[in-house]
Length: 448
Ligand code: SAH
Ligand code: SF4
Ligand code: F3S
Image (cartoon, rainbow, N blue to C red; front, side, top):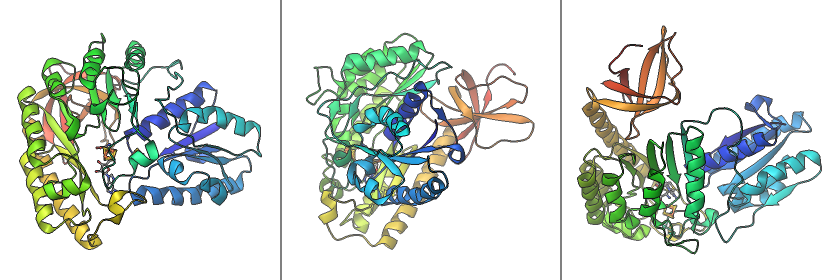
């Protein structure tokens, strides 16, 4: 059966979609582009209103496609599906499967059943008490990618006032360390060189009912020790949970990449308190300093929200001030978006949309100038780049390849048209020019 997957949301959703696609390929299904597919899988995100609306406009379009082909149908999964549940089946006749964030593991078999029984419709919305192990999908022939994600936990217990994730992904459930290690070993054995450990709040790994006494710092030590693993990363970290042992790991483990995504959300202590984040400016700056001592080449990135209910101009200027003081390499910044059922929905006063847009633009201007400075400082340095694929921008006569340095910066490197394919290769590169969001490099040492 020919299928396609459309994914919204975070890296966890991207990883879930990837697993689902592989699980279907193991069953003999073929992944194709949207115009050739007969089964459309939509993996949804409800973290803000915008990605949620995109799901409904996509469903409108897919409904038209299904109208032309009686055997075609849609499966809706992920965070909006967990929230809306069977409502998708009631509202859209062409939707034949709804699966939630824990239901994902059973989606491949359900899809096979639905193809066999054209009148059937199903929902997989139950939550599970413990981490749900997934079937191994790495037995497929063909080369493994150079870079892979590995889940170490599901859900989140933090209930930050603005956030819907704990409601749609359920409580935090840590995976057994042995299972994490086994998956990492299989991946490295198949040629993966870089692993990113994934969870909503990786620093509290092991601190829930699924815990076995192994904390996040120890897990990092064990994964980093797998022979052949060249780069280890993790995301996302909550500042309140980052432990000195994890900071020390950056000094201790040579293959732990010098990059940390550490969501700040706001630079105002008053707003941080109202958000329920349980750290303040001073604590955040303390972590930044300790990280710099552990790894002087450390690069930080972050998430920021502007226009949280009650945010004043003074609060916002505190955010600008802290962003400047830390000097984040890059950041994701968002306008606060009301989500159903979260604590901030009932907080006021709401910030005027135009005021929030203006703050977002000012914050992004500041970030762009900091990013430019950070990238300029890299010019002239030599670094190792792990290539991920072709660059988006190409020029005549040469092929541009896109990769990342250890700190996660995007580096594009041109190579003559006749040269070798670079995906999955690691190479020494000299950085020659800073672009707006990336660097341009040349192969160091030798010519092609
Ligand atoms: N677990 C991660 C974040 C997951 S959501 C963490 O704790 O860092 C990704 C980002 O979306 C958050 O960091 C936050 O900046 C943003 N976000 C979450 N809810 C939001 C909302 N209601 N409005 C705007 N941005 C939001
Ligand atoms: Fe959301 Fe906070 Fe949990 Fe992150 S830590 S997923 S922002 S509730
Ligand atoms: Fe979105 Fe769900 Fe991730 S709400 S950000 S896809 S956890």
